[in-house]
Length: 268
Image 1 (cartoon, rainbow, N blue to C red):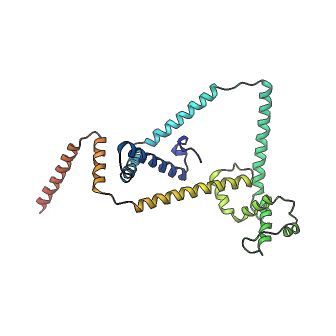
Image 2 (cartoon, helix red, strand yellow):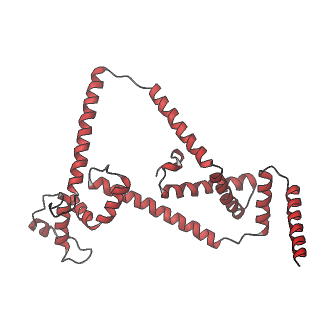
């Protein structure tokens, strides 16, 4: 799982931002309980308020600037500590890097061709054709039943690895979800194996986030209602945090209440 302490908020996905907010609140609640002696209920109430202030006062922007600054320092440090190798090794390394870049480009191009959909003018990519054939072989079978080896041999595709056949079948049966994932994550994949590994990993992260959100919602639903003591405690903290005294605040409250009563009396 990605370390969000090194990720700026503007770089986060919606799922990552929710996890960032949840971790921020969790850490702040722990701090309030240990340093201020608050109950869990009071600490959660105050943490929600403090997070809104944190965002409202551009605390997240200051955090992002710090992260970007630390990255610059790390890059400068790496540049300063650069190791020098011989010219022969450097020349060979550059040649290998260039050759690898061409291989990667070809692999990405081949992958795009292999998963190309069927059109009026084309029969579709290799994996699309293979997946459609597998789908036809499975059409007369019960749900969950495996395609027999004899059927695979009869269709003439036994020489194609079983993993490639399975991945091709998944490609044609989950095409919409696959296209959506590719659109959101770029075209960096060179094989269905790598693509499906990334999709499965993201699905697990999304599931974990959904469970965590569900637990948070359950806590909120089952928590006790806000009490007058909680409201007063929050009032006192807000007043003192902004440089005023409780006495000054109370005088203002009393003056406002008196003014409201006077206005009501005049209206009567």
